[in-house]
Length: 179
Image 1 (tube, rainbow, N blue to C red):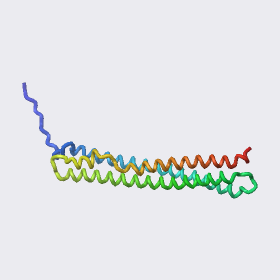
Image 2: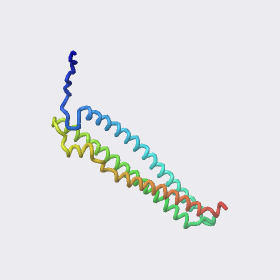
Image 3: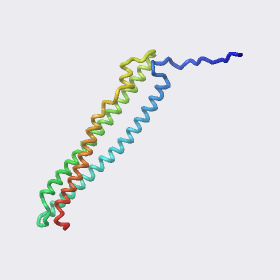
Protein backbone atom coordinates (compact mmCIF):
# COMPACT_ATOMS: atom_id res chain seq x y z
CA UNK A 1 0.00 0.00 0.00
CA UNK A 2 1.52 3.32 -0.98
CA UNK A 3 2.00 5.86 1.71
CA UNK A 4 -0.01 9.03 1.34
CA UNK A 5 1.87 12.21 1.49
CA UNK A 6 0.57 14.76 3.98
CA UNK A 7 2.41 18.03 3.78
CA UNK A 8 3.24 19.76 7.02
CA UNK A 9 1.98 23.28 6.71
CA UNK A 10 3.96 25.73 8.73
CA UNK A 11 1.81 28.46 10.24
CA UNK A 12 2.61 32.04 9.37
CA UNK A 13 3.53 32.63 12.97
CA UNK A 14 3.74 30.65 16.15
CA UNK A 15 0.56 30.62 18.20
CA UNK A 16 0.30 32.50 21.45
CA UNK A 17 -1.38 29.88 23.57
CA UNK A 18 -5.02 30.18 22.54
CA UNK A 19 -4.39 33.11 20.20
CA UNK A 20 -3.57 32.33 16.59
CA UNK A 21 -3.12 34.84 13.79
CA UNK A 22 -6.53 33.77 12.48
CA UNK A 23 -8.09 34.46 15.89
CA UNK A 24 -6.50 37.89 15.93
CA UNK A 25 -7.87 38.63 12.45
CA UNK A 26 -11.36 37.53 13.56
CA UNK A 27 -11.01 39.65 16.69
CA UNK A 28 -10.24 42.73 14.57
CA UNK A 29 -13.25 42.08 12.31
CA UNK A 30 -15.47 41.48 15.33
CA UNK A 31 -14.19 44.67 16.91
CA UNK A 32 -15.05 46.65 13.78
CA UNK A 33 -18.56 45.16 13.63
CA UNK A 34 -19.07 45.81 17.35
CA UNK A 35 -17.99 49.43 16.92
CA UNK A 36 -20.42 49.92 14.01
CA UNK A 37 -23.30 48.32 15.94
CA UNK A 38 -22.49 50.46 18.96
CA UNK A 39 -22.65 53.54 16.74
CA UNK A 40 -26.03 52.49 15.33
CA UNK A 41 -27.37 51.79 18.81
CA UNK A 42 -26.13 55.16 20.00
CA UNK A 43 -28.09 56.84 17.18
CA UNK A 44 -31.30 55.13 18.32
CA UNK A 45 -30.65 56.07 21.93
CA UNK A 46 -30.13 59.69 20.93
CA UNK A 47 -33.41 59.63 18.97
CA UNK A 48 -35.26 58.21 21.96
CA UNK A 49 -33.82 60.74 24.39
CA UNK A 50 -34.44 63.55 21.92
CA UNK A 51 -38.11 62.62 21.85
CA UNK A 52 -38.20 62.54 25.65
CA UNK A 53 -36.89 66.11 25.58
CA UNK A 54 -39.48 67.13 22.96
CA UNK A 55 -42.51 65.70 24.76
CA UNK A 56 -41.47 67.16 28.13
CA UNK A 57 -40.78 70.56 26.53
CA UNK A 58 -44.17 70.45 24.79
CA UNK A 59 -45.84 69.61 28.10
CA UNK A 60 -44.06 72.51 29.78
CA UNK A 61 -45.12 74.87 26.97
CA UNK A 62 -48.71 73.70 27.42
CA UNK A 63 -48.57 74.34 31.16
CA UNK A 64 -47.17 77.83 30.62
CA UNK A 65 -50.01 78.54 28.16
CA UNK A 66 -52.61 77.29 30.63
CA UNK A 67 -51.11 79.40 33.41
CA UNK A 68 -51.33 82.44 31.13
CA UNK A 69 -55.09 81.93 30.58
CA UNK A 70 -55.75 80.64 34.12
CA UNK A 71 -57.40 83.65 35.82
CA UNK A 72 -61.19 83.24 35.87
CA UNK A 73 -61.31 79.95 33.95
CA UNK A 74 -61.57 77.49 36.84
CA UNK A 75 -58.25 75.81 36.08
CA UNK A 76 -56.60 74.34 39.19
CA UNK A 77 -53.39 76.32 39.61
CA UNK A 78 -51.83 73.86 42.11
CA UNK A 79 -52.16 70.96 39.63
CA UNK A 80 -50.67 73.12 36.88
CA UNK A 81 -47.67 73.95 39.06
CA UNK A 82 -47.23 70.25 39.87
CA UNK A 83 -47.38 69.32 36.20
CA UNK A 84 -44.87 72.06 35.37
CA UNK A 85 -42.51 70.62 37.97
CA UNK A 86 -42.93 67.14 36.45
CA UNK A 87 -42.13 68.41 32.94
CA UNK A 88 -39.05 70.31 34.15
CA UNK A 89 -37.90 67.18 36.00
CA UNK A 90 -38.47 65.16 32.81
CA UNK A 91 -36.42 67.64 30.78
CA UNK A 92 -33.56 67.59 33.28
CA UNK A 93 -33.54 63.78 33.41
CA UNK A 94 -33.62 63.51 29.61
CA UNK A 95 -30.62 65.83 29.23
CA UNK A 96 -28.72 63.94 31.95
CA UNK A 97 -29.71 60.69 30.19
CA UNK A 98 -28.17 61.94 26.95
CA UNK A 99 -24.94 62.86 28.73
CA UNK A 100 -24.70 59.48 30.50
CA UNK A 101 -25.21 57.65 27.19
CA UNK A 102 -22.51 59.76 25.56
CA UNK A 103 -20.16 59.07 28.46
CA UNK A 104 -20.85 55.33 28.38
CA UNK A 105 -20.37 55.00 24.63
CA UNK A 106 -17.16 57.03 24.58
CA UNK A 107 -15.70 55.05 27.49
CA UNK A 108 -16.71 51.73 25.94
CA UNK A 109 -15.09 52.70 22.63
CA UNK A 110 -11.89 53.68 24.44
CA UNK A 111 -11.91 50.41 26.37
CA UNK A 112 -12.41 48.39 23.17
CA UNK A 113 -9.52 50.28 21.54
CA UNK A 114 -7.31 49.53 24.54
CA UNK A 115 -8.19 45.83 24.46
CA UNK A 116 -7.39 45.38 20.77
CA UNK A 117 -4.19 47.41 21.17
CA UNK A 118 -3.08 45.16 24.07
CA UNK A 119 -3.81 42.03 22.07
CA UNK A 120 -1.99 43.24 18.95
CA UNK A 121 0.98 44.47 20.98
CA UNK A 122 1.22 41.13 22.77
CA UNK A 123 0.97 39.27 19.47
CA UNK A 124 3.76 41.35 17.91
CA UNK A 125 6.22 40.50 20.69
CA UNK A 126 6.41 36.93 19.27
CA UNK A 127 5.88 35.50 22.70
CA UNK A 128 5.03 31.81 22.53
CA UNK A 129 2.52 31.76 25.34
CA UNK A 130 -0.26 34.07 26.32
CA UNK A 131 0.22 35.65 29.70
CA UNK A 132 -2.68 35.53 32.14
CA UNK A 133 -2.79 39.30 32.62
CA UNK A 134 -3.13 39.87 28.85
CA UNK A 135 -5.80 37.20 28.66
CA UNK A 136 -7.72 38.92 31.46
CA UNK A 137 -7.28 42.38 29.94
CA UNK A 138 -8.38 41.40 26.45
CA UNK A 139 -10.60 38.35 26.36
CA UNK A 140 -12.14 37.42 29.69
CA UNK A 141 -12.62 40.77 31.41
CA UNK A 142 -16.16 42.18 31.29
CA UNK A 143 -16.66 45.80 30.31
CA UNK A 144 -16.40 48.14 33.27
CA UNK A 145 -18.39 50.88 31.53
CA UNK A 146 -21.85 49.54 32.32
CA UNK A 147 -22.64 52.06 35.07
CA UNK A 148 -23.24 55.11 32.81
CA UNK A 149 -25.70 52.97 30.83
CA UNK A 150 -27.50 51.83 33.98
CA UNK A 151 -27.79 55.44 35.16
CA UNK A 152 -28.96 56.54 31.69
CA UNK A 153 -31.66 53.86 31.67
CA UNK A 154 -32.90 54.99 35.08
CA UNK A 155 -32.89 58.64 34.01
CA UNK A 156 -34.81 57.81 30.83
CA UNK A 157 -37.41 55.92 32.84
CA UNK A 158 -37.76 58.85 35.25
CA UNK A 159 -38.16 61.27 32.31
CA UNK A 160 -40.92 59.15 30.76
CA UNK A 161 -42.62 58.69 34.14
CA UNK A 162 -42.40 62.44 34.86
CA UNK A 163 -44.08 63.17 31.52
CA UNK A 164 -46.89 60.73 32.30
CA UNK A 165 -47.47 62.18 35.77
CA UNK A 166 -47.30 65.70 34.34
CA UNK A 167 -50.01 64.84 31.80
CA UNK A 168 -52.20 63.40 34.58
CA UNK A 169 -51.82 66.66 36.52
CA UNK A 170 -52.71 68.66 33.39
CA UNK A 171 -55.87 66.56 33.00
CA UNK A 172 -56.75 67.10 36.68
CA UNK A 173 -56.24 70.86 36.34
CA UNK A 174 -58.44 71.25 33.25
CA UNK A 175 -61.12 68.63 33.94
CA UNK A 176 -63.42 71.43 35.18
CA UNK A 177 -63.25 72.93 31.67
CA UNK A 178 -63.93 69.59 29.98
CA UNK A 179 -67.03 68.68 32.02
